[in-house]
Structure formats: C-alpha cells, structure tokens
Length: 168
Length: 455
Image (cartoon, rainbow over all chains, first blue to last red; front, side, top):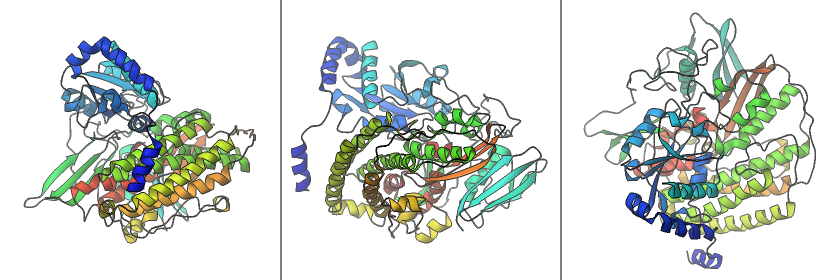
C-alpha cells in the first residue's frame, strides 16, 4: 500500500480545467439566491437511461475520473430520484422504458428539471423511428435544457450543466 | 458442437429458422399458416431467449419449450402483433392495459422476493433482476431485459448497406469498433473483395484500443464494487487516457465511424510512448492490487461458473475463458502472427474474470505494438452483390455474430447476436452460492452490455 501512496504523492493533482471552477464561482455569485433556494448549494442529479447505446453513460461515468472530478463543482450523481433535483435523460425513450422514465420523474420532489443529454432524446441521432421508439422526449417530459452530442464529451456535459444553472 | 445463435428469416412462402453452430448451420422451413417447430432448448438451454424472441417477433410456436413467456414484449406491449413480419409497417404503437409478467420465483417459509431495476442506483443501463432470497442467501435470480429494445432489426430493413453504418456503430457504445468490423467483413463479402493487410492492421489496432478502454474501466469498477475505491480512480485515469488516444487516432472518443477503407495518419512515436507508460502502470496496478487480501477475500470463490456450466450454456468471451473454455475469435493466423496469446483461467469466479482482463490488457498492448504502421492505403470498394452474409468478431465482451441478407441492393434481414445475449443467460447460475451483496460484484465482473443485448 505504501507504494501506492508514494506514487500518489509523485503524481499530484491531474484534474483539468481549473478555469471551470473560476467560472462556476462567478456563476455561483450570480445565481446564489436561486441555487440556495432550489438546491441548498449543490446540484443532485439522477441519471436515467431511456434506451441509449451506453456511450452517454460511459461519458457521465468519466465525469468522476480524476481528470474531470465533477464533484468539486458541487454537482453529484445520486442513487435515487427521490434524492435528486434534476433528471439527466439519455436514450431514445423506448416503448418499454417510457412508463419507467415517467415514474422516475414523478418520484423526484419539486421543484424539478429534466436535462436531456446526447442526440437520442431529441431524435437527432442516426436512429430512426420504429414501433419501439417513443422519442422525442419533449412529447413525454418537460425538458428544461439540452446537451447535444453523440455522445457529448465529459467537458461538454460539464459546460452544459453550468449553462443550465445559469438559465434557471 | 457449440451453439451460437438461432434466428428467423421471413421468405415469401415460408419462415426459415436458422441455427448457427460453430461447425455447421442448420436451416429448417416452416409454413406461414402454422408456424410451429420443435425446440432445441433440451440440448441447448441458451436457445430459450432466441426462441422466446422469435415468438415475439414472428409469432412462431416452439413445441415442448420449457418457457413460453414473452421476452421482448413487456407488460404494456400490444398482444398478437409480431413486428418483424414484413406485413407489419407501423412506426407507432399504443400502450395496452398492464398484464403482469410471471417471474420465476421460489416460494417457501421465510422466502421473499427482491426486485431490482429497471432503473439502477448507479450510472448504468436499464434491466431488471428478480431475486428469491432466504435471508442473505440468493436462492434464484431471474434476469429480465429488453428495456432498451429499439427495434434495430426492423429499422435497418430496406436500407442500403452504406446507410446502415451509422446505426450499426451505435448498437452498443462499448463495442462500437467490434460491430463496425463485423459490418466491414459483411461489406467485403458482398463486394467480393479482400482487405489489404495494412487496413487489417489498422482495424485490429482500433479493436485493441477499444478492448483496452473497456478492460481498464472494468478492472477499476470491479474492486470499486467490493468497496475498494482507489482502484477505480487509478484505472479510470488510465481509461480516460486510452479514450483520448482513441480520439487522437480516430477523431471520436468511442471510434464511431472509424472503421473505414482509408488509412490515416498515426503518430507512432507518441503512440508507443503511451503504450510504454500504460504497460508500466498496469504492472504497478497488478503488483498493488494482487497484494490486498481483503479484496481477494471478496473475489475468490464468488460467482463461480464451472467449466461444465459454461459449456452447457454456450458462454463466450471473458466469462467463458475465465471458466477454462478456450474460445476466442482472434485465434487465427493473422492475430497469432502479431503476438496474440489467449488468456485463460480455470476457477470461473470473479477473481478469474478479473485476472483474465488483466492478462488481456497486457496482451493487447503487445499486439498494438505490432499493429502500429504508417500507411496510406485506400481500398476502392466495388459494387454490392445480393446474398446472405455472416461474420464474427471478438469484441471486448466476447464473440459477436452478425448476419445480413441483401436483396435488390437493400437489407432484407439484419440480425446481430451480442456476446452479452449468451452470457446474460448464464448469470443466474453464478449466484447460487452467494449472498445478495455479492450481486453487483458478480454482475460487474462479467460487464455485459444491455443495449447490444436488447437491440
């Protein structure tokens, strides 16, 4: 184990984009009132996959790796919709998932928002309409903000989330 | 004789049921008026999902099958519609009243049911797991999927092969390159062309980068599910670097659209540097992680799939190789010449699957060194001929099978069998001696795809 700590000390901090923190500080100041009111200072996200290819999930997982470390911005993923402020929705809203996505949305306490991530929920990915696809998601849920990309990179997701914070 | 897949094609006068084994294929014709056929599940239990899927998709009845419940069509799906029949052309269906699904459950004094999913606590895809529990002990598990079913088989029908590519590469984000290579092989069969060696090497390089990314993610997440978070931080850093390498080589972090018939520039010096660093980091990681007894206490003897069971359920890929089944689609002269050696373990537990991934990581690095080449070959593709084509590829999960029929220049029938489709059916056996807290660990050690499985 000592070897690990030696390596850890040698490597230092590799997290990138400190300017994002600066930007967040600025945004925080601007929206302090609303963030305090809505989110008690931090933003809790429940990720729901409504039929994606797993690339958007992989990029959201990458947000927690040492290069991005999303939690330093006070934004974190939670295990239950009941703990969440925001639903992050990926995928094409398949016929089989639609009722479950609506149920998850119903379980989020108000005030609540839905952010769609990736091209699928807006039906802009190469997938075409079939019997098993119910997208666009706007027909089923109130989408407050959209993060485009197939899939959006972790940085694009981070910037999208900050934009959303500014918007509300 | 290893069972690989079983699927249906609709011809003008009859249904054709095709069963793929490793040594030969079997074709049977059944009438459209009375579509009924004998089950193969007595011999090959993993055939049951294929048959239940065919019942949903085409309305075919399997005589003597031990399970007749719907598979893809869930509680609210309209009854008596069979979307893969040619006569079905709707692009929208209405929900029908909820008809409960009968889970496989064990009853008894003190036995209770735990339902998990389809939406899980982590950032993962949707799927449902139904446990029958006696206290902590798992008595039975039923894996129930197809929540992400998008109807891709139907979506691709009537498309030209070229137009199908962007969809094929997005069937499963983790295995995009593998799907593209399967598609490439079918494309080349249809144009009756051979792939130049330099392009073969480039595509093989991309496939190994994809495998590296996937395995690095797994060797981080498996210890994390046993409560050892620092392994995840370490491996996810390496995974991110590998993903950036993918972006550098292909222009996309997942390699969407990367398998083409044109070679492009690779910075070989920088690539080799990355490989050397990764090699050292993986040695360090292995040295460190093998020496943590509390972790191996969780890994060893957890989630055992015996050799006999792995063969019976026709498991593929990492899961099969960890149980001592020696199958890998890369075992061919091209790969052997470039340094391929098959990773193998005997014990079939979580620890074995973890070790197989570590071995494959090291072997991938070795092979990538051989695949690196500066080259600017371009293959002019010829006209596509009608016909029935099949191909295989070893994705990071296991053996992927794809079949495409082309008629009048467009796709008549598309079928893909993800390695996950086989391995999900063996997951319930791994649970039988363990407690429910081991489930995330066992599930992650197999790391199967949901999107590729559900299609």
